[in-house]
Image (tube, rainbow, N blue to C red; front, side):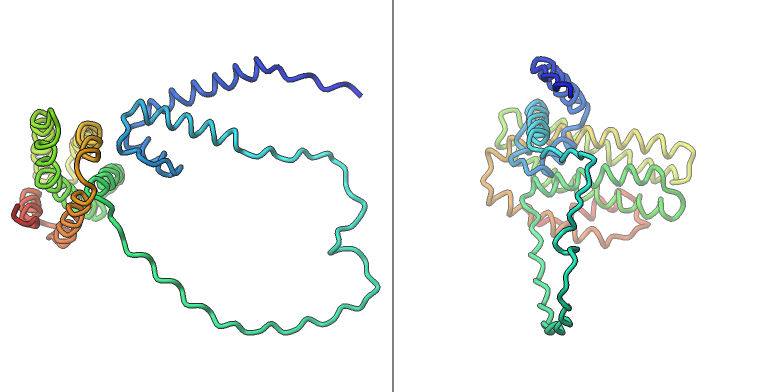
Length: 282
């Protein structure tokens, strides 16, 4: 029998380093919201306060730890046991008939825990992902399905931008050192998105240019969201009391509920006006 060849530790280390490098390159190709979502799935806390470099490093470290913790699979030897398992071993005893099972009353299902939206930053982060999903689904939809999805997109974007402009941007102006510059840039992008949405509505959902213009709006909205997460949300979490952010979340959720009943045939500018009116006076 030949002796097993020794494992080259240096070769193994090189392979692991190469794999780690590939993982890091792949992670840098991901968007900030994708990195945060993946890390949250893996149970990593505090992702909303991390910048992209920190998110990438944390993801690479987490994936590397997962690989090291993975149990080694058993190696099959090809040999079969000639001894039957205990439950298959022959017996000379006559088995007793089974006793009838006792009836146990079914326990009442536990009540689901009340929905907790978290704080207002959590609400906006969830809506960022919902907007991205809506854009993707809308691009391939046709007919009545496209109309329904477009109406849903208008309502969500209207209430989302209203939450930012009426609740979050004022905090950023007051708390961030460069708050005025940051908020002015984000507000300009939000106003442009509202105009682009109205242009799509007036163009017609079956127009030949609809899909191309929708894709341009999608790219602008997603980039806008990533800038907010990096330049506003991360800093606000560290500077605004958690109780205040949770209080604003309750206001945001109430406004969201009010806008969901809006008329599907209404123009985007009407929906945006309704969304702003759904918030209490400051």
